[in-house]
Image 1 (cartoon, rainbow, N blue to C red):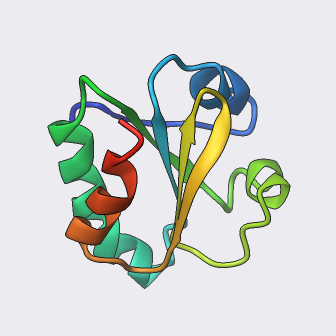
Image 2: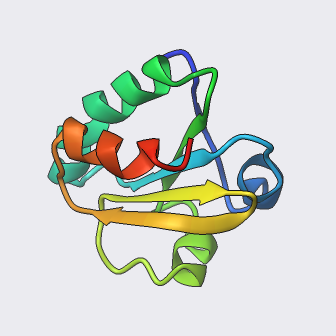
Length: 108
C-alpha cells in the first residue's frame, strides 16, 4: 500500500475521517470489483502526491456496510471527499486520475 494510504472500518470511520483535521478521500471498494481495481493505482498515486495535504483511506464495502449505507452508496467504486467532517465531493465509477484530482484539489 502506498505511503499516505490506509484502511478504515465502520468502527473507526468517525475518528479517522470525520474528525480528521485534513481533508480525507475515502475509496469505497470491494475485492471482486474490477472497476475498483482500475482506479486503485490512481488512488495510490494521489495518496502519495498529496500525503501532506490530505489523508486517503480505503473502505471495503463487503466488510463495512454501515458507512456506505449512511452515505447512500449504491455502486462502486465510489470516492468520497470529506473536509471538516462534511462530505464535499462524491465521485462514482472508474474515472481517470486527472478528473479525480481536479475534483479534489479545490478542497485542499
